[in-house]
Length: 310
Image (cartoon, rainbow, N blue to C red; front, top):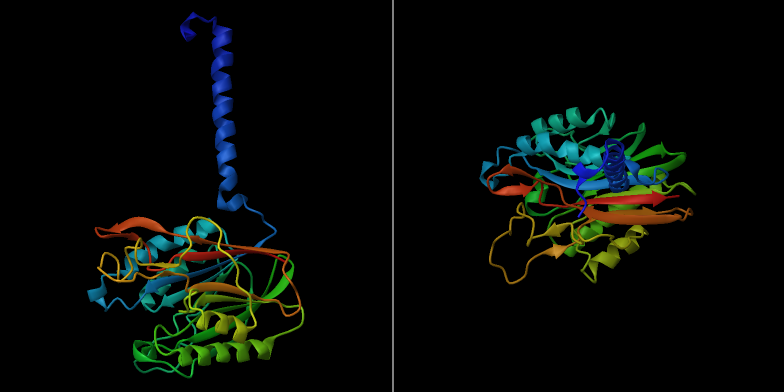
């Protein structure tokens, strides 16, 4: 073995300088995978159900205020162009999210469908963007079932120009549970809204929590057919946006069940209106940090991100 103390001083300087250069090179090589060094020509879009239910529902122990202070740092690090959030029902948590995200995403619409008063909540759908947006339309679903009827669930459509491309971006949150017919009615309402604003060559990108299992051999293809939109494969190790087995925010986590839910229910769909995309990739990310003695997951959903080249 070499003994560095036996070398002359100049040789030792060269030896240690080489080590420094090696560490610098390795660090730079590793950082090529960081979010802010990804392909900047791609339009990056995120959908994330943050489970910010009203904090008065203390029995579910979801602490929306605490999580609202933690989630923005993860969203900002992804460096996406547009975000649609679902279940932003708690007013104070909403304000925290907006305040912490506004520097990176100065253009914010929602939560949608706030008007009406009474005891009903908004749709819980919020769209954030780095680029100015024009709000085209909001709709409230005509049919609902169970607890979903306490919210004005629906969809919101905006138009914006991103990296030289004019696009329309929709955020939505569909019925949880309920009958298949309710979901089919909601797909049809969304499609009618999209058709009212469709223009040749202006793609419509449809993000949100569709509460439609990708494994459902009837409803999933029905959804794509009614919306005239396309989905695609998921890249990476995480393949589910809803996972009872690993997600400690899932209501079925650590329960003894015959069948655990592991599926995709959150989507970013593409409707080109005559403009095919050059490439598209989708990946699912899990945001975790210890925020409670029993919880590390920051929501009961994973995050879906799409990189789109037009």
